[in-house]
Length: 175
Image (cartoon, rainbow, N blue to C red; front, side):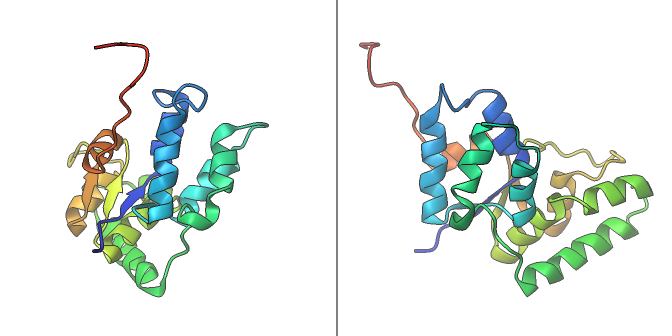
């Protein structure tokens, strides 16, 4: 009865907080994510967690939310298999002549390769706002690296649809 695991990028949380799913307006979205974290359906690597809480402002709703869910899959440490997958991802990026060295360094110093490594090892799905392929880009991009390693990469809306999220208002509108 194992279901697929969705590995969420920091961009998913940050963009949701800043835009369509603000905490004070759309709490049901955050409750849904909490349920999925509790169920083990969505997860994020430790570096994604660190990105979320590192730029914390006083009373930052996202940082507060993330800290209270740290042990529920929002701060997953890498296993040795994930570390091995990361080495393969790093080798691929470093040996790819289309990427300039500063772009390689930027990508490899962040959470993105860890996100892909976790999904690769567990057969999971990467969820990010960066979902369109750009094989001509000199910027190292999550979808391009995912494609090379056969990891599925989708956006937030696709994940919500696949998980059967339903945020329909059921009051005050009549029909």
